Length: 220
Image (cartoon, rainbow, N blue to C red):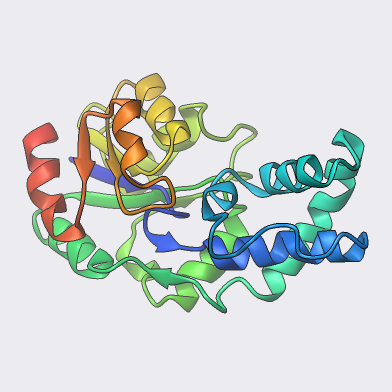
């Protein structure tokens, strides 16, 4: 069957404020204050927890790789305690996913968020049951941009890897799809905005209402 696999952060949901707030917990613990801005640094949050710590330490001129590894579990703990305080689905997500399913597409999620946190978040947002699979950063020994998690998400959703597309918002998603030999669609309403055009995906998505037509044009 044809399948559509989605990234989570910055693609299905705007998780940036809760992610940035979790990183700032670590910075406050170290006496650095709130280094990242939840409103303007969303793009950092979409790069992952360690990237947020790395950027914060870069800005303050303090600490290094060892401190990133030490603080990362604390970041996950802080995020786990408040992962849905400000997070919202992007407009039209549920309607688009339901329409894809009605049209016969398998749908799933492939994210670099730890699987348990991703599961909790999707349940909290009330849409977990719309997706046939969810593969997280720790589901397999490797994570995106390695293509294995994407292929596993397709398989668990009941899809055919030869007839699939990945919807994402970063170069990681673009490279994951390329490595798996499938098409990518990048959203223009994520933290990177219109800059995703420079990543040369097979298609762009400005509004979830357009997704079924965009997918149909790529994989039928």
